[in-house]
Length: 406
Image 1 (cartoon, one colour):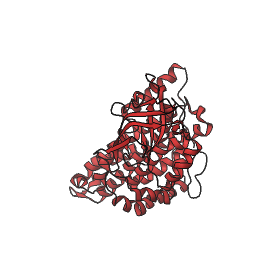
Image 2 (tube, rainbow, N blue to C red):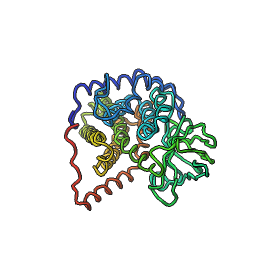
Image 3 (tube, rainbow, N blue to C red):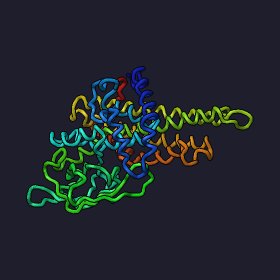
Image 4 (cartoon, one colour):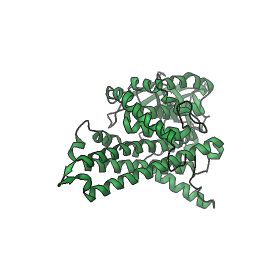
């Protein structure tokens, strides 16, 4: 595959995923209760083998019937699911975000306990990073992990805006083990939901999946719960986000593509001013702009994923300072901002019918807003991009070129 097109095998695979999502997953999504984990939907993702993609390493073809692996495979999967069923896409993505730190940094016991359950769709995972006073500024975490004198810690504080909370079965929790140490004083812990002192409340959000707050009242965690080493949690968080940010862009591209296709069909059929709506130059130019921006975002997402896979295959050390974080930030920024534009333009082209409850575009209009905020708001992505560019300049290194093949 070049970064400019998908080969026939991958195109066929993506088409099959879109059909599968429409036929098997969308009916389950429609039966779900907004604001709650749709466990039958997650279980179906496991039964269909789709959750396996969350843990595939780059470099392979993804196994039988799966012609892509690693971050690129995840992007193709998320884009395809988002096109036909955003609820299924989000359910899959949240499983990955919450469980990837366990896969990448967990002990053998942690992986054996939780990953088979996640793959099967029986255990719900969550990524607990954000706090009331530390959303985008992850280094400012205040959830305290205080030594209790027995070699363990007690977690005290709050997490907020946590997807799948309070219904997850386990949480990857980031807490401060070294006061006044900034990013260097954060540790990641695997915390089962039934741990004493951990409670949660649901938040009423513009989202079909649950988002909640978690309260930690002296929750005990030990060295067996640590992910990635004491005071090394910020690396766990950033590595996870670098892997998933391009695929957030893929989610956005899938929504943009669905809105574009709906607009093509509508403007080709809608009678207006003595002809079809598509015959108006202003409408045709709008469609052209929507298509161009969507394709540009798609290409950047694929390139960022390919760059991540290339460096990941070389090992973690190769990825440092390689521009992976910059490319991931660019992909998420461009794709999520593009999707917002495309969906908004599609609503305008459809008129009032697009605002009717149950219309595809009414659904997408609600869904498309959040990705510009979570996993680092657009402003944070711009900060990351600029920081990396200036860092490369100060070290007299040229920013690495975009890969031509993957």
